[in-house]
Length: 320
Image (cartoon, rainbow, N blue to C red; front, side):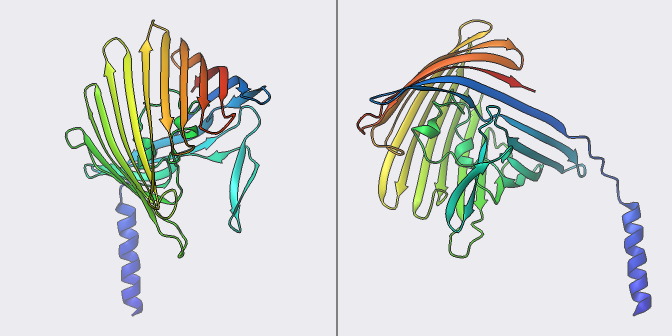
């Protein structure tokens, strides 16, 4: 018995010594800082101004070859509050409690990819959220569709994803979201996205991500035309245990000059609030490859009395 154990140990040591060394390059450090000075006018209420940090972030990412067929990849990303108002939340005995935090979790994961597609695990944007691509031309700002159109721009934790390789432009994505609670069902998010030349089309579906009995379907289209013109549209329906509500938005971005992009977006939805509508107009001015200043005005209201809100904003964004 001792001789057998010794032989196995020696064989294992020999195999380990002969294994190929995997070189792991230094990760790439990256970030984005986006801040806006906003002036808010409320219908039948007081006006105020505020400085907002809009999904500003710091992160590291990288990849390395495990062998000739498989590449490992990873990312750790955290949101920062450039305005000093950063908060995070935690669930304590079923109650969500907010607290001040220098960093909050964003897309953070490990994975591997090859001819079979891609597998990753961690916390990241759901397949349904990611399916919107860039049709929301005011993403991460006060005019973001998550504020008036949808409840389903989620970044769940405890996710395992499989994403297929491109099948003549078609990519399939499936997320299994672990509830980690025997009394709560697991949930799923999935999408089918097709890209060809100037056209992008996607269909996505969530099962139980927003809660038990809540299913969401989203359809997205984006068209990139010559001359720097981008057109986008999104339609979504949410079924909450038999009660159905819909929402939609259309958007356009036009490169009016070498450094100027004009943008407009209209949204209408009953998903978050009954009779919600929002119209936003704005412009970006490119300072450098990774820097811009911008401004926009947004007008939103719902069927509720005195719900009208206008936002006038100017801001700057640096990427590095």
